[in-house]
Length: 404
View 1 (tube, one colour):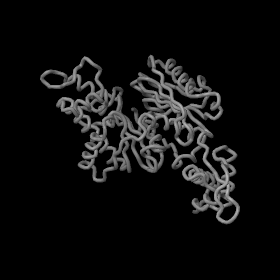
View 2 (cartoon, one colour):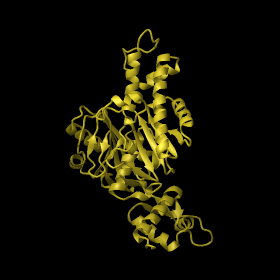
View 3 (tube, one colour):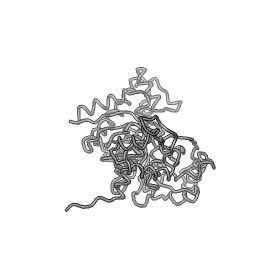
């Protein structure tokens, strides 16, 4: 039985198309929009009128005549709506004021003093206020906060965030009260995946996985242009992926098996244990070790550091191969400590994929770095809270996770 198409859905899709054309090609005339979109001129004129009414585009003067009256040109207004993206990790709060084109207008950072929910709520609110001014406050649609934990899809409570010591924490209501803004909560890896999908390495792709390696390891999964969270928000929790038999001795309330061998924390711990005259390492435990320092030592010929890096890359290569075998994405974007010193570690992961997976995906580094999370948080506000989907490369739909 043939069903009728929903007129409101068709109008929304057409508005997406028109606004993307004006954003990407403008200044552009109504007639040229109609030609490129293959929509009728009356349809385009109606949609343009609505977009002008909502402040998303404006008329900016006349174009060149092709024989008749000079056409009026249209331009996208990226700051017609703004959102604050917030990145919360175990060390601090990073906030950015983001426009509809993915531009970051202003940023602020504050450290966190403790893992207490009240203290962190106040720090987030202070950071949000630092990126806002009176001149833009009426255009800020909300705050999108990315957290290092599992976020329940329905309630948006944080069910599990071991790096903060949290279980079943509600940040939404306290932050609404503290900021006076609408609030949405998302997992950090998911937010980074959305940011890369919107304006980063994943722009123009439909199926991608973003993998981040820092203190924890997580993945954000986008399939068919949709963010996949899983039934309880825990999709992408690849830190718990088993890559060897030692995983059988671990408990799910601890950091995961993959994190135990491949996270930045694990790299540093293994390097510290290996620091002995017998190992011949050039590094010393007297200074604070970082993954970047271990990578530099390996590149300089330190055999112990090279072994630690090799073990990390092998574990991550197997994990990415497992993801590729199950999800078959077009693209895997990797961020965090594995991309801090050029592309050599990614080359080794690609080589592992070639050996283990019959149809390996492309593997590339993050294009946005730490800003991916801010853009993803803002994207949540624009799409989930206010339905301002037309400015994105495709209509983001949320259907349903990973901890970073």
